[in-house]
Length: 168
Image: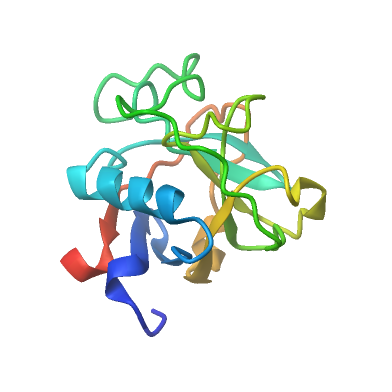
């Protein structure tokens, strides 16, 4: 596992193949980072599936309303919901959507991000300036690469747990 420099701004996601350590970027996107930590601390992400996983593009997850494999997963609705909290406004920056970066998933409205996010499998610079980048995988990308593909996958992988490193 990677050396954790700032435990309060580090997320650890447990996947079937092992842990993924994400360094959050609160200086770049403070509201998005705060929302992920808030939901992680509530346990909202535990059991949530990767509902949209596109080879050579990204793995999307975080629909806490419809995507929980442990609490009545509705795979057809997964990807359409968020949390019971208000949406987060866009926090666009100059950071590129490189392999391993975390982006905020949203509808066509730039200010509609809520709980969903995606992890880029490769550099996806066509997304630059259109989706908020608020974190990067610092270890465990090999586990992200093994997430089952599909839109939605027939047997989706899930986040077993998500924790803020300061609490782990």
